[in-house]
Length: 371
Image (cartoon, rainbow, N blue to C red; front, side, top):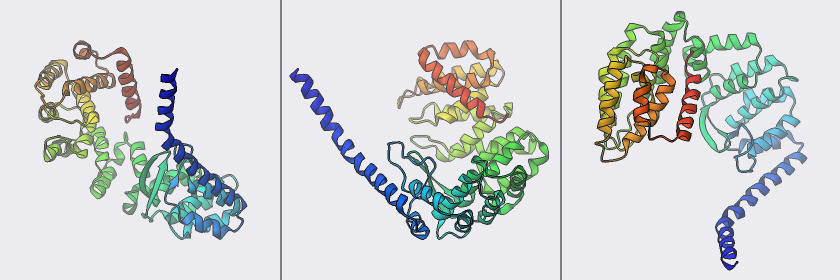
């Protein structure tokens, strides 16, 4: 009994700092909510909003604490007219005020003029000032132009006609190529060769390696050197950890859309390097094996045997385990029955629950691929 009491006391002692900290933050949120509920001066609400540090999509940090911005924006939505929100969205004193006022217009899309949302969006398209955004406890930076565009589409705040016009405007205007919506439009046109020249222009303007998979999907011969060069970018970061580069990772995914034999030599070099590394990019390994499993079995099986044998020589870490898991996921993405035996051979060490988890991850990724 004494031992049980001691254990409970230790648990309470360890947990105390967390419990002590949480109520303070929660009480601060509750206090602000009460203050805002009583505040009827719009300018005072806007002044409080202007001091907020980030825009919260769901209002909570995931630990029961409500975002200050979310509380104040809720009061802004209740207090301001559509015309006032429109004015703040277009001419607000800072980025967080503009973003929050625009969000309020989207929340009120059924009662506000749909065209007002569209016009406020158009006015802010050139605005690339940075905004901190968070979804629960994950934070990222986004320019205002991309934020309001994404927000409008995610909340269905635009008419079908305005949406089509905006997509065309973003896709064909060089000044807006950094807007995140451009990549949704590129994806929409991924199987229409008519749009290939413009996609290539966007790549030349932005240098965004996310576009490499679209080049591969278009399968134009002039892009083979480009993909080859991007694949070889890992050579610029071969150090103790061999973490590689984002450019190579994007190129590895790209060639799963165009698995030409021409890429085999550089893939062998990449795999040989990584088999002896101390760290790995797991997504890159998955893409690499997906490409391999898309090849004819005579070459692919020989490749897998050679690389797995090389992993056995890695004295820095157990690279084989990571390669095995990447191979298992790749097999479920590529879905090539010729590789069933070789996958069974190397993945025998995986538990059933781990296989299910990897297969589920592979299916999720497969569903996100260009269709």
